[in-house]
Each structure stands twice: as structure tokens, then as C-alpha cells.
Length: 59
Image (cartoon, rainbow, N blue to C red):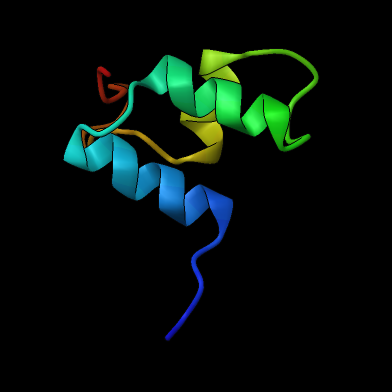
């Protein structure tokens, strides 16, 4: 059994609707990935973008 990274786990939880983007940002902050709760940085780290250029996935 492969253990997922925090990024993989949070991405999966977001895509399934289990957590919100803000909750993912909180988790990244608590894990030391960011210096404050930053939803923009969380979106970038979790690669939450639509396939069309310039459009981000809305969470």
C-alpha cells in the first residue's frame, strides 16, 4: 500500500468534496508548507487549475 503525500491527499479530498479550499490551506499551514493560511498558494501547490489556460478551478 502506497502512502500518499499531503499534497496528494488534500487534492483527492478537495476533488471529492470532503474539504474546502480554505480547509486545505489550513492543513498546509499546520504542516509547515506555508507561513499563513493562504488559499492562493494552496491552489498553486495542489495544482487546481482548469485545462483551459488562465482559468483556475473554483473551489
